Length: 329
Image 1 (cartoon, helix red, strand yellow):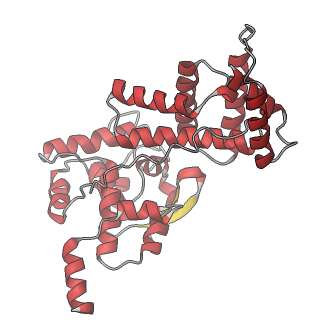
Image 2 (cartoon, rainbow, N blue to C red):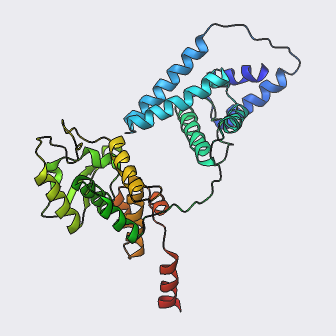
């Protein structure tokens, strides 16, 4: 209870004392209260109300920063679960509270290290924002370090696998769809937002809306152009969407619809782990292997951070060997 009282006093002095002075105040209060018994007076539900207010303000800030609604929902759910579990005022949450919660969560749900580090990053973002806005003295996540995750090399499609998938397509729509995914390297969310008018067949390019509603120009090859033109010429509907369902009323295909169609193709071709994102990763790897500068691959994929691009693009070991012999051998 003494620690809680000290934190509340420190909180009351935010904006008056700097960090060093806050630490001195904490040390003096700790010494002075050693000989006293401090009991907490019972309060009503005001702590939960304040917690919700802080969370609402943080989420509003994230929306202003351009976070997608999907990200905002994930942040809200993750933080809410933690706050409900600790049942504490945000200003009283300690590093150990977060450590215990993360440990219990991992044990209960058998969560991967990637999931646990994602949760740590969300908590860090939330409490760092509270600290920066002077709502708390110091973020309790500061002493919780990044979770070390294994550097797993994710699979890509080989040229042979891509050809098998193409041969398996019985619908021109599916063929046009996987060709666009494979040659443009766009996200599935970007694909479903494309309209017919967005396609520039002369330049073999189109404008997509990526994460954060950012526009970028992407490009596709001649084979994709031919399949797209054939698909559009065969359509009898007037839906402006580029990719629509196979049956009436020919609605715009959703992300789930694309994923289901691609998964079905993989099953028909007896190929495991066929999903839209794998086409994107394949393009990135292929571009790097064939000598495209990483900065250009970053721009092509629409990544804000080049480290993200490096995770997608796995350099082929054979190419490394050949380059070494050519340049250094």
